[in-house]
Image 1 (cartoon, one colour):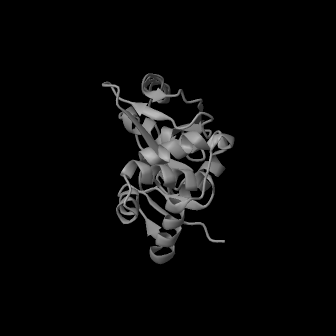
Image 2: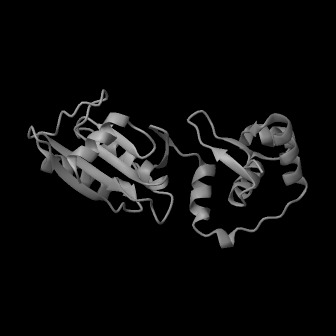
Image 3: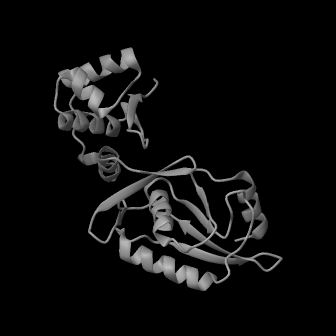
Length: 213
């Protein structure tokens, strides 16, 4: 891991594959980012960089790594396989860098003390909580051969709605099609897995649209 490469990354700013944290004193926030990277396409998290892209460094990187490691082991399910690097800059500042590969068994969750599970997903420079529909897509995309798809009346209705309105949510599709929310969610998930439509995850509710031909 080369300091010049890291400086290039930092100069470009955060994106879907890169996140900065100034300190490691809130590991619960850091593990959300790590889980989001695992659920998306992988990425790097650098501890010791401020929001305005200045290299501040970590005073005790080994202690920070230990605290983050404990949080990952305790709260991330399935377990994350991470690589870490401690990089020293020419002016003797320490950076703690985590490399997160894309998870093999998706989705990954953060499990809190009461057992509640939340998955996170990376959109641009933000990590958002994944909806139940996105979790289902992530889980089932690992075994695409097990996805049965039938184009029937409900699916035809969905395509007509999308042709008119460009996007739908689970709730709007259920309402317009006169079906239950669960049925609407199932249809949308299957259509995404069949590469007929795409999902646009959002903190304000996922939207679905047709894939351009």
